[in-house]
Length: 65
Image 1 (cartoon, rainbow, N blue to C red):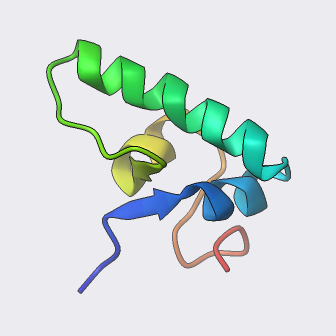
Image 2: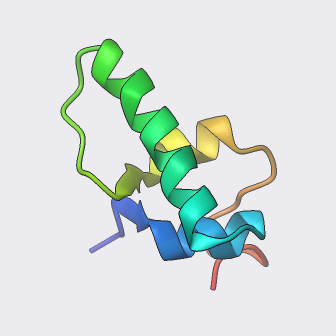
């Protein structure tokens, strides 16, 4: 099954930031999703939404560990 969510640690690795900063980024993205009427999971962000918001992310590519 294909992964649906990225964790804060995965976001930190992709973006090259600390775990704390990654949690902040996820909070911002989840707030945007919540405002649009979607349910969110704390500390995780949907892969599809992250791909849309973060330029250059390709699942299974060099940015994905």
